[in-house]
Length: 472
Ligand code: BG6
Image (cartoon, rainbow, N blue to C red; front, side):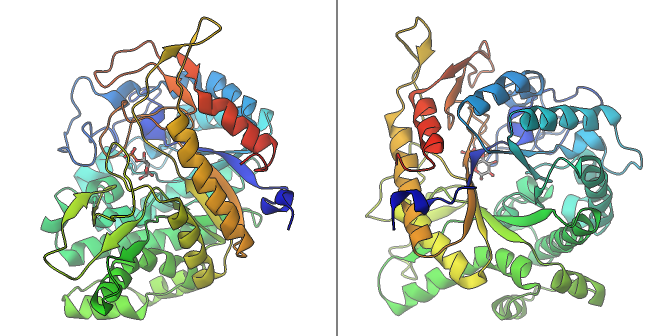
């Protein structure tokens, strides 16, 4: 096979953003607080209601006002796609209103038009780790079945508004993260281990029903819509060949696969029925819910991939270290990022194969990247840059494994790297943890000019896209 054929001609190269981490303008043009605003210290910090006077996401990187310049830079890199999310609270500030906020709708109109101007295909995440704060405080977030109606109204509104401009939609970002970070993923207050499992799985069920409903309604509004689910995919390896470790890894993997299984197969898998029975978890599920999930499965499966995890059944070896929003046993064969995320390019090939073998549906990598500390240095033209060879190395080795997976027969629609421009981190809410090809002069203490500078990786990614992966 020649090298050109590794990435298909229409492969959707690009980057991915999330409203709460880039837009800022927290209370502008009618928007009200969201659960994202109420997490000023990230997933591991306290929920603060109302949010403090000053915090990073309040202004973030001011994408709300600077999107035209930023989109221009993405276009310069040759992006075919930009994944964005719609902040629900810009459209329905409290979440339970009937009438949408026109200014919020108009903002996304202009952003989408700006992308289209450069031939960049938008992909929209309907809910990316934030709901209007009112829905969390007044209704208990996704624990409440009423959320299905509110979500349906929001989704119908934006589908109808953008139906001729947008084809790709994701119903929920990293839908499985709610298990470890209930406020982040579901607007549910309290620590995961303190929340009754029946309550948590009921909230998850409400999201499944909403996701199926969004798939149904979307296809009715525009049959060409491509609607996908999105999971945080970090495959588990057994620490040793001990059969107990194999089963431990299988079970830990199923904590993720459960979410993709329901979306792709339209029903709860047998292993979850056993888990529910053994843990006395009871959820309310109507016959209509079952029918909806069965009939309206997703068109494609998307996922984020940053790292692999490791599992063991041996108590003595089971020393947990922090990974993304959950912890892992250290894999002795892998190095980790500055934030302890284990770097494993081959794990991405493994994850792609695992998902494709299991579902035989097109896949989409909608997040991948390295969060690192960058140092701004002077460049030859009297401006500034970052020599981020470590980032280039991370992305290059991962994309090489993507091409291996495609040679294995995996059908992959595209790749949007996480944070093509520096943004506020979700887990630790820092600016110091940077992912971008574009540096933003903004710092943990909220200071900075917000100026943008191209890093070394900017031209590297531009070349990858221009050569359709041939330069890798
Ligand atoms: C994913 C999320 O978990 O990873 C993003 O979908 C997040 O919102 C990204 O920003 C990177 O994580 P972090 O914590 O380094 O920002």
